[in-house]
Length: 341
Ligand code: SP5
Ligand code: ZN
Image (tube, rainbow, N blue to C red):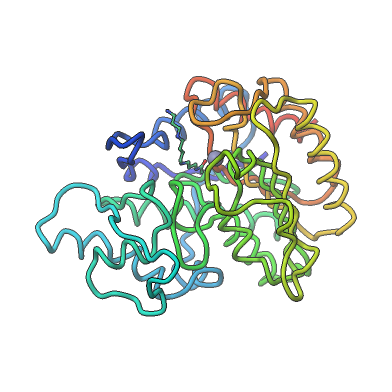
C-alpha cells in the first residue's frame, strides 16, 4: 500500500490544558515517527511526499475566513508580543453572539475553537496544510486507479468542522479528501471513523448531504470527549437524512462489541455502494491508550482492516488519533495489513 508522508508535521508540537494544567499535547511528533518506522519495518510499500494543493482545496469544506484565520493567527498573536502557544480563553456559548467575527485575536481564537486542545504555534499552519495535502495526495492516487493509500496525517482532522478547530484538529483532512473525490467524478463517498472519539467535525460538514455517508464508532459522548455530539439519534438532516450513522459504545468495549458494530456499519456502507471510502483511522481504541476507554488488542486491528476490506471499494486511510506511542505503529499498520489480507 502506498503511504504519503512529510516531515512537516514536526513543525507542530503544542501544549494543551490537561486536568487544569498546561502540558505537552498527547498529540506529539513522535506519533508519526513511530507509525512511519512501522510502515518501513514491515515493508508496507512505497512512501511518497505530498503534492501542494493550496487553500482553495481546503475551502471546499471549510469557510474561507476560517482558513485565513488559521493562516494568520500566529502572526496576529505574536504581534502582541506573545511568545507562548496561542490558546483561546473565551467561547461564545449559547446566548452569546456568534454571528460576528471578532477582530482581536483573543476573540477570534474563542470564535474558531471548540476547546483548549488546539494551540497554535509558529509552525502550526505549515504542518496543518501539509497534513491536508497528504490526504489530498492520497485521494488523488485513488482517482488515478490505486485501490488503497495511507495518508500519514499529523495533526489529525476529524474534530475540525467548517468553521472550528478542536481536539488537536485544525483542517479536516478526511473531509477535504472526500470532497476532492466528489470534485473529481465520484458520485458517493463513505467516511468511516474508527477513532475512539466521535468525528464531530466530519459529521457536521456532511450532515445535510446524501453524497457523503458518515459513520462513526466511538466512546459514548455521555462519558467521552467530544461530549456534545455523537449520539445515536443524529441521523442527518434534510437531503442528508439517513446518511449519518453513530455507534456510541460503552467504556470497556472490546472486540466482541466493537467487531459486531463494525460489521454492521460496513454492511450499510457496502449497500450505499460508494465510489470511494475514507477511513478516519484512529487507534486510540487500544486497551493501553492513555486517554481512551476501549479494550482492543493489537491483533484486533488486523480484524478491523479485514472487515473494511469486505466493503470492496477503493479506500483511503487517513491517520487520526492514537496516543500510546510504543504500540500505535503496530496497531495502525495492522489495520492496513489486515485490509491487504
Ligand atoms: C484526534 C483525537 O483523538 N483527538 C482527541 C482529543 C481529546 N481531547 C480531550 C481528551 C481528554 C482526556 N482526558 C483524560 C486525561 C487522562 N489523564
Ligand atoms: Zn481520538
